[in-house]
Length: 362
Image 1: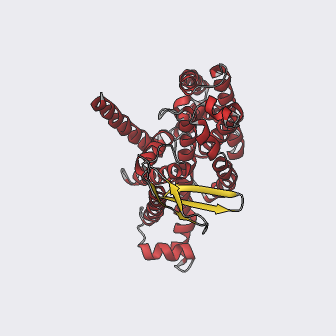
Image 2: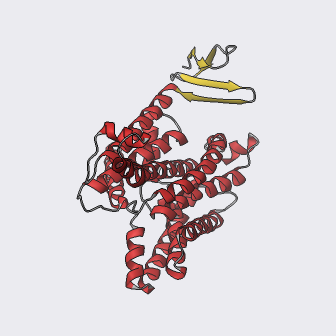
Image 3: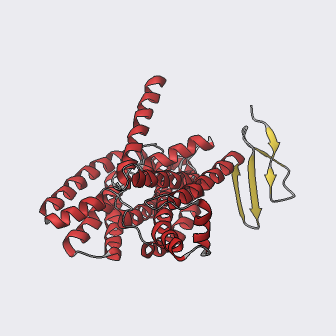
């Protein structure tokens, strides 16, 4: 039975709406409109607040602990010079990059899980992360390129891999299950290629590529922060603009086509944007596994939504990566682990929980 309940809305003329049991917020301005459940908004705000708290905690702890009030003073520039240097130049860029990379990975995972309609539809499962890693690895080992060259290589490798998977999976359209199976096969081939490249490299190159390939924020600096912010400022609005089209695709290609959508074009555009988000992270910190896989599913369960919300998934990814990087820094201090080791552990716990849950269901 469907019930009609009052709806909070920015339009005074609107008085009620149908919401299937969940209170919703509806916003309308001229030609633009949107809706979200109150629970999803509150969960997203809570995740954002926890992420900010995690960033402050990460900044305040280390070899030289800084009280929270001095951290705030260091951020505003009112503390002494040494504190400002530690807070702004050394610790803040790493903590912010962890949050930004988590947003990118969470949103990328949400895009691909929405496209494939499968919780395993993650860029690190389908092979797009491996493609970005291969492109960056070729540039790093063959040309010895710097940060921007590696970034271009990661983006090119990811996009080429996405196009190959897309073409191989295309049979009168692209079905989610077929995309995952083809992506897993391509990922295995790329893993073999990456191993071959590492074996042909010199010991010094192997060491550099090996540490970077584990997914590490240990070398994060303020020089990386500005380009990451600029790229995300372009990619995130584009992904959010395609969110309504993604929701239509979740109905199936036939239903989406009957509603005037172009499934193939939308799917290709969202794949390119999702790969670009992964490539941004891979270029700066190496392949960080499992955040893109886990964050959307945790966000969906927290918000209790039928689909995968992009913003909630992004904020969940930010919180997970900030916490993971904090653990990577502090678990074996003063030794700092690559954050990818911690995220793999988190992903392993998630898989164990998923197996137990599915076993109990059956």
